[in-house]
Image 1 (cartoon, rainbow, N blue to C red):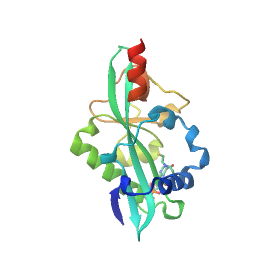
Image 2 (cartoon, rainbow, N blue to C red):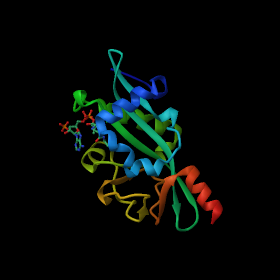
Image 3 (spheres, helix red, strand yellow):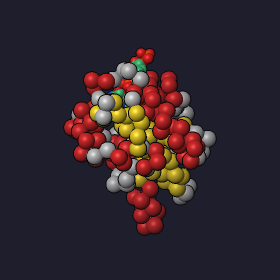
Length: 174
Ligand SMILES: CC(C)(COP(=O)(O)OP(=O)(O)OC[C@H]1O[C@@H](n2cnc3c(N)ncnc32)[C@H](O)[C@@H]1OP(=O)(O)O)[C@@H](O)C(=O)NCCC(=O)NCCS
């Protein structure tokens, strides 16, 4: 198993893997609305490759919480983590998450991470919690128990989570 920057993989191949892991209706998910049209962060996005075949991906995105106090708090949104169904539960997802979290630590981006996902997985293995997300609003439905965050700079305030460019535009218009 090899981890390489996701940018080295054909984007169409990545999309096919995401379809297999999440189903073709994945684009309607709230996580997609949060990150908007921003590009994934290349330093924090990786592919797992086995025998030259793509078996897993992790992508991270630049987002922000536009606080009701008027300030924008930058966060990195982690995910999707996707492992090809034929290779799931073999440690690939955990290894990819560890790779992305290590890279985030090197750049300081691990000070404020957010994700939407199963607490049984992301809490148990990676310490993500709902402790500071209860007052966040999102541009679509989310189960509160699945809105998770990690890091000392995660804002525990009411506000709207969205892509950084979208929130910049909204703040400028206010
Ligand atoms: C969730 C996912 C990324 C996990 O990766 P993986 O390589 O299959 O799993 P890992 O080998 O890293 O982890 C295995 C452990 O996690 C547990 N686990 C896996 N998925 C889980 C989930 N959704 N909830 C709770 N626990 C889970 C397994 O039971 C196993 O625990 P064990 O070691 O005690 O037996 C992968 O299964 C996947 O792509 N699923 C479909 C897409 C998805 O739901 N992605 C996550 C949302 S962003």
